[in-house]
Length: 255
Length: 309
Image 1 (tube, rainbow over the protein chains, first blue to last red):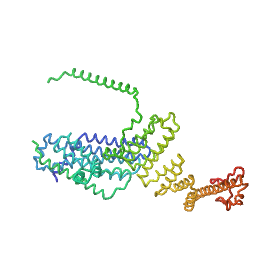
Image 2 (tube, rainbow over the protein chains, first blue to last red):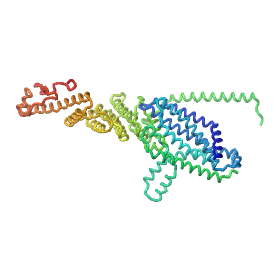
Image 3 (cartoon, rainbow over the protein chains, first blue to last red):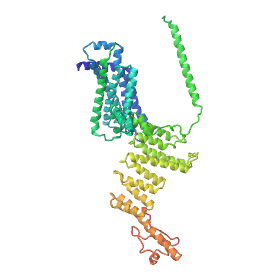
Image 4 (tube, one colour):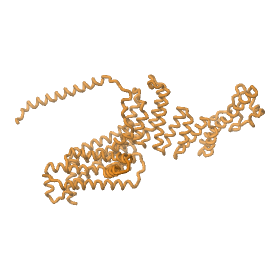
């Protein structure tokens, strides 16, 4: 584990030097603050607009950070040939992948915490109270971003940054469109086709499990069971993706 | 490769900057000119291709609430632009998209209905004619239907909210004078937990206005007996006076009409109706007072206004 944390520490230091991170953070902060101006245009509840834009900004920019930095994380090491130096040390390839993931995860946590502080401050300026319930939505956004990070690292372990970005974004889109497949399955007749579609639906990511934005903004009740269920879903799916990344990376020949 | 002398590099940079400034100035000038060219506008082209909310939901990738917000903000600006003549044509469609994207977003239901009702009033009196051949009254009616459609969606998506049924009843009663519809909406509204007491009074009033005096009497009596304060009791009492007066004067006018048919003249006084056997006895108003009869016209009315008791 010491080796994993060593790689994580180096990855964190490297990632926090990346200018893209601060550029995305700047735009996220701008979007969150600009929501105050946007809210002036509405008739009715202004805070709703601020909360929706704020949470969406944290999610969008969090995913962008994960994809843009994660997709070059492993590829850079291979491209600059520093991978040989690393793997010549008593470092397992699995430890390398896990260290990279943890390092980027820590970076994204810090960035999300920063965006969340700005968001809560903007909401506080309107409501004069700290909306702790927003943290529920933010916590699950973080879980989703960590899953996307794992996906970005998976693709980065065998593909170029551009293709990895496209695949990672495709994963994100599929994750938010999977309920369309559910609707299709309901219209299909029972049989092998429906069973195959059902299996595909179960296997494909369902990122809507981490989407509590609407419930939190409207103050709607959330079933207690879904907290643990969604959390474990995120943890296991992330573990699966990382496992896949480790498997591919172990077989990878860099010469 | 040989490096060019510094002077040559400097003049090339200068030339490049000049070209950049020149092209920038050119396209800015061209844009200003192009904006002055008037292009033919196809009615409804601004929003004619917006799909329904159900399909748009799939395209928002989990940001359906945000999409609802943005479309709502756009709708507010769009409907507050009086120069867009056809802006009311797709009002229900636009607000149905917002409602389907975020069914629990409350403001669009009320604001959408308000825009529809204001639009209906504007259409009736606007110059030029906004109906574009459909007829002002018909177009206004369609806008009122849009208002009810929006509020019905609000009530269906938010069964715990009384406000939409209240708004619909209010529109029916005050704008359309459709007391049947008002009674239906207020009747549903008052059953929702948390609905204010006055919705029951509005229901009772709608019953009175549409002529169901017996049910109106029973409802007002119940309100009187269960009134939580003196003010509500007074209001109910005034309405009970009004309803009883309507019931009694109605019966007396009917009897006057029968008297006239029988004797080809109006009765000299109300007691004549008793003597003629057309009524058993003369009713009294809620305060025990007599009704006022005009032998010249045959009109019967209460001695005082319910609101001046």
